[in-house]
Every structure is written in C-alpha cells, then in structure tokens.
Length: 636
Image (cartoon, rainbow, N blue to C red; front, side, top):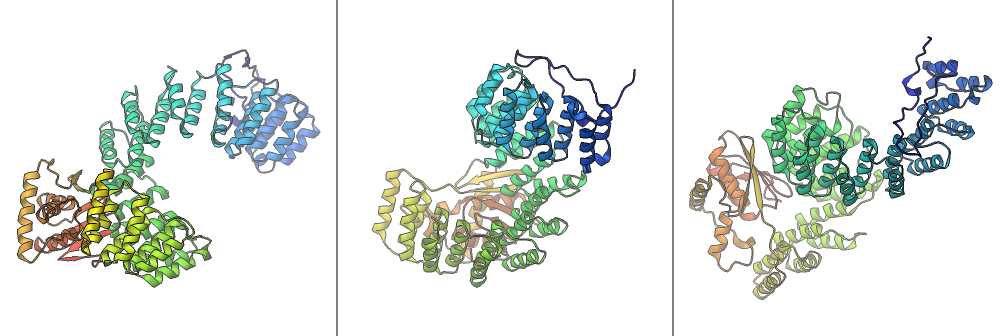
C-alpha cells in the first residue's frame, strides 16, 4: 500500500467523538489531489504561492473541495488573507477545519468581530462545529470585550460541549479576563472534569481582582500544583501589595523543589524591590546568572533587576546591570533614570536622559516623569521647567503626573505660590497626592496662607484620610492658631478618622521584619527598647532635642508626644539593625511614609555617634546617612 507524507500544517482537523446531534461524526477525508498537496510542502510555496494558485486553477484541483480547502488554509498560514477569503467564498461547502482556520486567523490577528462573524456563518451552513470551534470563538469573544460571549456559551451548552476541557477552560478564561468571577466560579463548581489549567485560571482571576483569601483557599485545595499555580499565587500577592506573603510563598515553593521561571523571578524581584529585601534580590540575580536565564536578553527581567537594585539602595549595582545590557528598550532606560532620581543623583539622571536621546530612543510619558522627579529631588528648577516645555517636541502631551512633578519641583524650592497656580491652571483636575506634596512644602516653608487653602482642599477631596487633617493642624500649631487646631481635631473626632500608620521594613539573615510605631511584638523588643533609651541619652548629650512639631495633634502634652517620637517605626528598625547587622554592612530600612524631620535628624546623629551607614527609603526618595550627614542635603 502506497503512503504519502502530508505536512502537519495540512493534516485534516482531528475531530473528537460526536457529542450531540449538531456535532455529527467527522469522516476525515482521505488525502486526494496529492500533487497539489506535495506542492504545498515545497519551501518556495510559502514565499511565493501564486504559481501554486495558477497550477491549482489550470489543473482543475480547485474543483475538489478537499484540495481547495487545504489551499485556503495554506494561504492563511502565509498571511494572504485576501486571496484566502476570495477562494473560501467560492467553496460550496467548506469543511469544519477550514471554517476553524478562518476563525482562528481573525482571532489571532485581533479581529474579533470578523472571527465571531465567521463562526455564525458556519452555524448557518451545513458544516457542524467541532469542540475546537467553540474554543476559538470564545477566544475571539474575549478579544471583543465579551460581546456575544454569553450567546456563544449558550450554544456550547445546547451542543453539550461544556464538559470538554478545552471548551470549559476557554470559558473560564473568558469570564476571568472580563472580571465576571461569579460566572467563572459557577462554571468551575458545577463541573467535576477539571484540570490544573482550570484551577490556575480561577486562582489567577481571584488574585487579579484582589480576593487573595479565596485565591489562597483554592490554591491550598488544589489536588495537584504546577509551576504556574505557584506563580499565579505569588503574582497575586505582589499585585495586591502583600510582598511579605509573596516572599514566604516563594520559600515554600523552593521546598517543593520547583525551578522558578522568568515570570516567577520577575514577581520575586518586584517584591524584593518594595520591601528592600536586598539579600533575597541578590539570590534571584545569582540564580538567573547561574542558570543562564534570560541569556538571550529578556528586557522584563533585566528591568526588574535594575529596579530591584535601585529600590534596595544599591545604585552602583543597578548601573552595572544596566551597563551590561544591550537592550535599547525605553522601559529599561526609564527604570535607571527613575532610580537615579530616587537617590538624588539629578545630574547623572539628566546625563542618562541625554544619552538616551543621542541613541535615537524616543522618550515617552514615563521617561519625563522620571526626569522631572530627578530635577525635583536635586532642586533644579530651571532644568525642570525647560524639560517640561520640551515634552510636546517629542509627541508627549503633559499629563496629570507631569504637572504634579513640576508643581512638586516648585514647592520643594519654596515657590509654593507658583506651584499652587500651576495646579489650579492645569487642564485636568489634580490628584489629592499632588495637593498633598504642595501641602508638605507649605509646612516646610511655613507658608500659612497657601497651606490653609491647600489643606482645606485636601480635606474636601479625602475626608477619610487623617493625615490630611494632621498636616493642616500642625501648620496652624506652628503659627499659634490654637482655636483652628481644636477645630481640626474636632472634625477628626466627628468623622472618626485617623492618620495612616507608619511601618518600616528591614531585612536580616534572609528574613524581612516589619515594625510599626510603639511595636513590642518582636522577640527582641526588650533589647531594642533598651538600646533606644541608650541612644537617646547619648544624642541628648550632644545637643539633640526632639522636634515634636509634626507629631499627631490629638496628644495633649509634650511628654506624650516625645514618647511617640522615640518609638517611630524607623527608629525601632534602626535599633534592630544596630543589634543584629554587622558593623561593616549598611542598615537598610524601607518606610511607607515620608520621613519626619525628627527621625531625619535622629538618623544623622546616630550615623555619627555609632559610626554606622544607615540607608532609609521613604515614600519619595532615598536618604543615606553617614558621619552625621544625609545624601539629600536636608532637601527632601
């Protein structure tokens, strides 16, 4: 018996067994018109299919439905949509494989309306759909924002195809991507025929929608986990800001002896960056190098490494990674520019910006945010204004973030009236955070008139944020307006609001520790508080006086305010670091709020008295304390 090898691309579509009267058994046509099929397999056919078409027409092969269908599929595989569509339209009865090819082509090319239209044309024809037809059209419905998705699901149910895994998982994916978690869960719960893909899809959906509790319940209940399962759960923690749990889960994953892939490693680097977990970030970097991961160049991984080192206070290591990368990706350059800005290296950030332009890279919106922040932290007002004005020359229209950066630059430089005018005149409504930055500048420069206007505006915008009331009350207190202070305190009590709790993170021996103000939950609390008392006595001996002007205003006496200052979260973390971290290593602390003036002064003096390098990353920038000085030059 003579056999012929047919290219995989042209093999007939493999139908599953019949699952309803609408999905009739498929009789796979035997390969006919073999000369034509053999021509399709020749290398020259893909680059120039027109001689093949001429041969098919003149030889009469296109009268054979099977051969004509295979030519349609071949034309689609080579991107000749117009030719394929013309030939398809001439077919009296395309088979399901050819219909699927048309649906798949349009879905893959992100033309969902056309893909769905072909599906409904197929249903109107004599050709029954296959299981994979439904999977393809559901994918198209997702791309189309869910249009006709429920209608297609209804037809799936009528045809009895919902029990097939490929269809079920496509539907789960559709409802998950569209955020319709109740529909996804209903589909998941009523089907016993599930696989790991089904579980992973739902876990990822709950994670992306912030329901980490349900995601973790599903994760723990899974009959079998794979790398995707662990990555989905870790990514959910990272996306929702629960970085400590992400690191903890990664440790459990290593106990299962699973080798992390690029996706998992990028998530871990993001968590390390946010927590300042340098040791674990370095471990990830070493793992990447030893295993040759991303050797060909993975810009997402490279950018995550640069960002991790920047946010962990290691600007030199970040530059080493950056300089060793050949990628010309703008996102990578933005990460390095932003890192230099956070560290107060305004001049180096501007030099890198110039290098970027010299290479022909076009800056985008994020680039200008980083460059303007660099100018803000370095106090380069004229440079910032010039760069802001140049944005339109690069096709970038200033957005809310850019106006906010420029206003912050002006406010930090003491030009609060001009900053207020800029925010009032910008073409869109400023965010509360932008008014908040200006309010901080008013407090720094004691600009009571502008500060009062901005403070009242902030409270109106965010009436449940206690920090807004505190800023205004402290500004009043600094100017002796005690009746106004009492009014603000009364308003806070009536609304039941409180100031956001400050917390600080410090890594030691591969573990990240979290401290909050007055925290006594740590096993070493007795040692920590004893050391803080010793530190305070030493600092008072050289003239240190607590600055209680920024302490929460609902405390009645200075002693109580002073006690709170003594146990701010960064001071607790600092004492922990002095006790545990080797003298040769810097103490690295990450704080969720802006460092207050008292803690800033305190850290400078501790660095001098105890001979320690202390690196603190607050909400806005890095402070490197060494020998009684700070890298910010007291400009933050």
